[in-house]
Image (cartoon, rainbow, N blue to C red; front, side, top):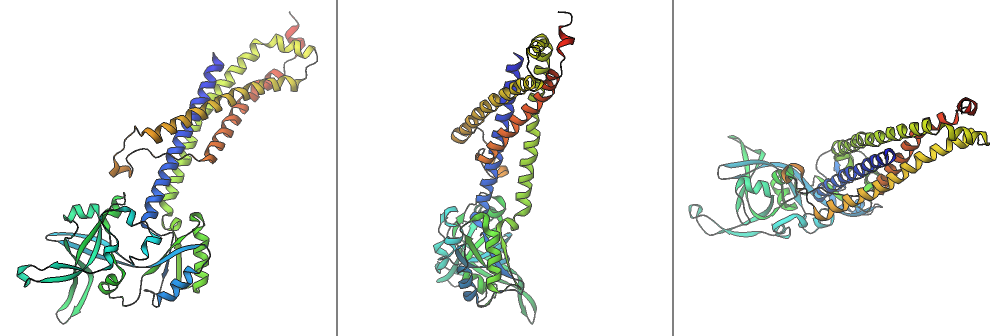
Length: 399
């Protein structure tokens, strides 16, 4: 019975470790996909300001090994206003014909389209402004921002630059009207509330950049080789003042925190297996006390100390191996249930996902299994040494 309890302890510990690590890996993978849906793998910028003659730099970037696609981008800050509602936003000017190769923007649009950014839209003018029609550029807004400002597709919105235009009367805010051509939902509250997209030419005119761009966004073939590609891009464009930053560097703090959480959870839950190992230690210690006569007889018949010790080490290894295999089966079954039935619901605005994401990493399975068996074997060493050190004469003297 004690051996069975020890085996169940190892089983529960291994299963818990596998499920928790799978959920943490799934959360990290889900967060990475959401971030990369709205951020490039690599971004090339210049410390000297806007990139002039960016077509030449774009061609150099596209010719770099490991680059799948590249597109120019314009960044800026502004305020969006409709009526008495105003909100600060980050402007991103993109080329509608190229952005799909770098970002998965179209896949997150819930109404309207990205292609509509590339053309002017005829909208009626108010009677107070003289009536008639006017052609406005399009703008793409996040769902949370649309809710906050009460915006919908085909609505007009004022975009106000914080820089302003100098006049004899002082600085006058630069303001331009746009029409909403689409609403996107990234699944991340900060992006949906603060990001807006417009066409590259419209952003250049609004921010008065002329023909310059803020940078070049790049998608690479190997996601985890983005840093090497970034360094290759820097060398190809001539180094300073150019700087290529990959997605891992841009989100270093976030992913470092997730990795640390995974390590801490793994260490804490590993203590469950350690507790089970103490049960194995207690079990084998009791067996040694009960089997003193048998051990003495074996040694009298010629069994060596090493042979006796290996018996008890093997006993601990069998319990550890059986418990680990049962824990693997139970953990994989739990992961399968979480992935297919999704019976645990989470508030999406807090955790970014509505259900627990699950992603099984084979490396985690191997590490958990090996560590579990090793812990059980180590727990059996002390009882094995005690059994091996028994003196047959002392045990059999009064038999």
